[in-house]
Length: 133
Image 1 (cartoon, rainbow, N blue to C red):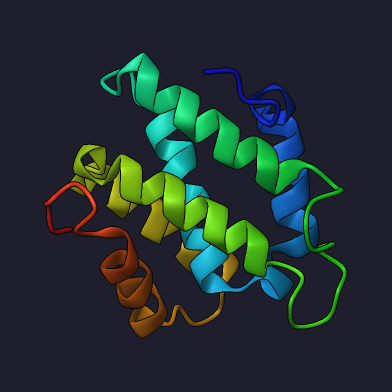
Image 2 (tube, rainbow, N blue to C red):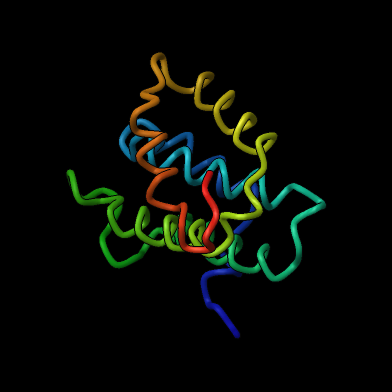
């Protein structure tokens, strides 16, 4: 399966986008991106799952997507949908170590981490593979 978004993923572009938009994207989007990023870096994650991750992160990085990221309020809704879909497809591979790394990075970037938002995201991605997070 060829995915046109996968080619847009690269680490430098991801960190630039996160630096520019983390606060406006919101904690669910940032946490989803971080989960995917740390899964991509994990040598224990199989290639098929990494292709899904690369496509989702590539879509997030891409400056022109279904709803432009600069659009007030709605700008990251399409990105969140893509990120949640990707995470729901590979949720069984999310380890406690990956979650911990993502949460630590969230604490660096946000003065206050809204655990309810993170739990809401985790509940949205669990179940598609029959596993709970």
